[in-house]
Image 1: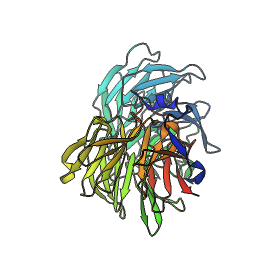
Image 2: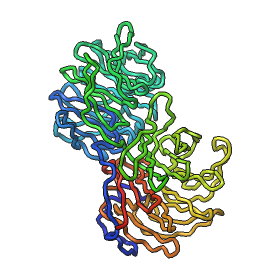
Image 3: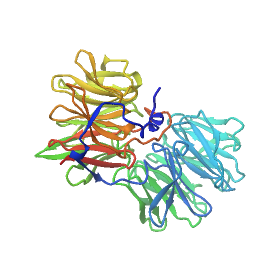
Image 4: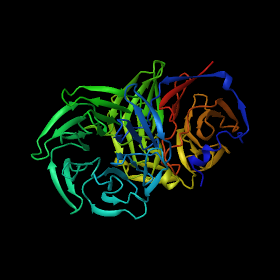
Length: 540
């Protein structure tokens, strides 16, 4: 089965499709600048004071220069996937590959060791003072393990069904302190006796717990955007700093400086626990842009961006970014949007990770409907009759959805090889990219399929111009192409583009699709998963 990693090797190969070139007729410019991370999660600080940050979707582990606000890749993909990072007393760094289910370690610049595998959802980890290592699965599991630091013995299960024991740390009393994500609590665990005791309650969504040098306990609440100090004896809570929601992790250095990561901001802040003042070390305009859609009014384009940790819009002329909703914020309905389409006043977001399709009012940003139970939906569009068509990669099919909360579902066509991008036509037909097959096809309302172009390299994002021509992000070749539906002629619009991130292992669906959209005047917009940027292509 083809996957994104395999296709990466083909990027430099000669294109096998018959194509014309019109690249000289288009000017490509960056509309929204990129950022350092592909979503930022776990943080860790080594004995020398170096700050490290992990990314799951980008499958990379970074070293952050605190003074300059820059980051460089310390462990590249796919092994660098890190949801959490911890340092052993001897300086060994360990990290968790959440989607891959692997746990790795490395001492200094030595070889990387795989300590455990087959643990999907492996999330948080911490070393004891004696060097023993403990880790939990969260979201895709709910289990606490002891991990053999030599990677010889299999993980030893200690407890399960704790309630989402997330970013944790051992305290001065040798107990494991951590948040219970799904219970709004902070707990301590005696790992030798497998006993859990609640320390503090009343959090919205606590995400991580750390200690400073004085034994103070600090907690980040991702839903409320708060950094909270907790008295480990009484459970009393004090808000230290009010930040933005979507916080993920924190790390405290030997000078008791606190560093906090924010998924939606794609950023890290340094917080002074005495004053609550926060200094932004690094931040992005976007978090992790995937699919995009465009609405146009009075000749002005608005780009709707599925930004994984947020839903944002971008002014097609100025590049100004507006945030409409962010993940995990209290009272907000959003579930890791990865693809987006827009037509009229309908914006549709979909997420393969949560199996959801969300319909949003494009003017008010209010959620009209949230549909659940899909298997890796990679795109969705509203049809003329108001029903929704979903490209369901998990079942290799296009599914027509109608009725209350999408309860009525019928398969329009099956046996598709990696359906990713969808766009509607003028007479009820739809067009779909099949990433694994390397094809773009037309599907009639009766399910009849006609292949328009083949031998493409990982076609993903798909849009349709006012002239009826299809615009495709061919990510395996890192180019943008135009397809004439009547003849199948492929014309290259732009090449050598920053698209086609080879991040998470296993290929689709464990990556973020490259989005393409066309504005009212024919301007083409596309997302860059490599740079976390938005580009526009304008005809000269």
